[in-house]
Image (cartoon, rainbow, N blue to C red; front, side, top):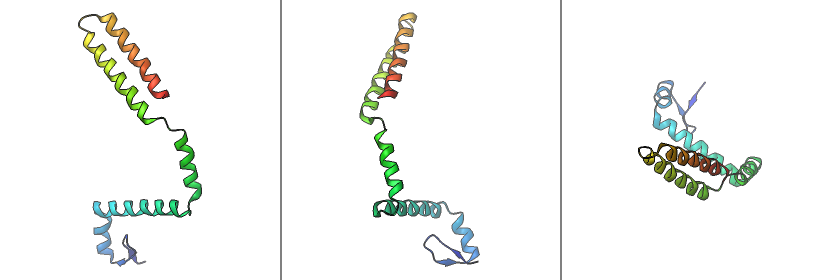
Length: 108
């Protein structure tokens, strides 16, 4: 059975082993497979896949607000850790508050 490279050209068995275990060759193959997938999606050949992706994007969280709330949570958490040497109960309360912000972050 003839062996073909990623471009569809016939190659010898010996060269196949070189190409098959070459990381760059593997990367080129992965990228060419992806570009074919995108080409198929945008040409309408894979319309069902495209529609499925669009439905999933509607349920994605708002990335901008997720990042903002995440930064607020991190700031509150750092503030809580800085308070540990001065007041352990206050620091614990602030760290619990940062976990509540974390829950809100997942809902945004």
